[in-house]
Image (cartoon, rainbow, N blue to C red; front, side, top):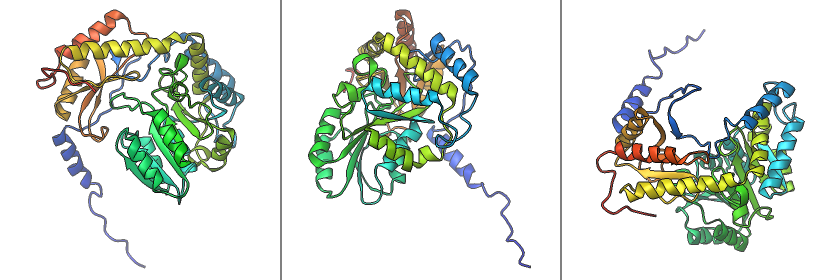
Amino acid sequence: MTQPSPQPEDVFAWIDGAERRREEAGLVRTLRPRPSDSPLLDLASNDYLGLSRHPETVRGACAAAERWGAGATGSRLVTGTTELHTELERELAAFAGFEAALVLSSGYAANLAAVTALSGRGTLVVSDSGNHASIVDGCRLSRAEVEVTPHGDVEQVRKTLAGHAGRALLVTDSVFSVDGDAAPLAAYAAVCREAGAALIVDDAHGLGVLGEGGRGAPHAAGLAGAPGVVATMTLSKSLGSQGGAVLGPAKVIRHLVNTARAFIFDTGLAPAAAGAALASLRLLEREPQRAARVREVAAELYGRLTASGLTAARPDAAVVSVRAPSAAAALRWAADCREAGLSVGCFRPPSVPDGISRLRLTARADLTGDEIGRAVGTVLRTAPAGATETEPVQR
């Protein structure tokens, strides 16, 4: 009988070198469990409308769990679709202005589902260079011909689409998570119409913030319900819950139900998350001023930080991105803010496509004037050497 080949003592010894290189580059990531009663002022989460702990959102989650159970119990096509899921889909589509919607377990899964199911071999997928990792991974899994165009470059998208004779689609974030800038959706849509291409818009950072009463970036651009437009979104940001959705023409949604592997082979969204998202959506419909308020807070944060010499991108939605001198400086800056009672995001390579590290502040509709002042003061007081410019650079 053939003896098995001897195994090296540690088959994962190569990880040691990778860890060393990450440490030297200041790129080590760690999990930091937060307590339920954290004393930190939160400008790091994506809870843009302050709804994740709102009593109505929490009651929606509890009521759904009590009625439907803790889990969906199976994939959506087996036992994982409840009446609650279809109710959420119907109301999401109506709110955002689309014909139909499909709820998935995450925004990540929604992008994988939309990009892969609507492309495939022989299709050209044009992707903005600033797109989220979930779109990038969807492109990689699509088996399509993928062309990455410079960030926001409408003319290059036009040229790329013009050079392809078959089926094509353009995929873009509506609001880019690194700098918080908005895509030129109207111009992108016009180019797609000229070329006969579809447009997929990831509205993760637009829903609840942009458009009339927070109906999203496609709605604001007059694209909601257009026959060639599909939107993806997450329920974990403005709606304070968990999950994702794809919105578009009914025939597109039917196609995803039958072909999207990220939907077919995944367990359905937990009823509690669906119930929480539905409660938040209804609350937003009753209180549309929350969307305008979060934009006001973002503008105030940006104005006060840049007036003090920090370099930041002008926010088009809720994200305020402040540049740091280096990855190590960004990490230290975020840690110093935390020690001073402020939680902020820290974006470093490979999360930033341009290699420039940043602090990422997210505005919330429920922040008070005193809290905004405290946040600005903390960021300025802890700023590392080299973070300020004589004349602030504005996008």
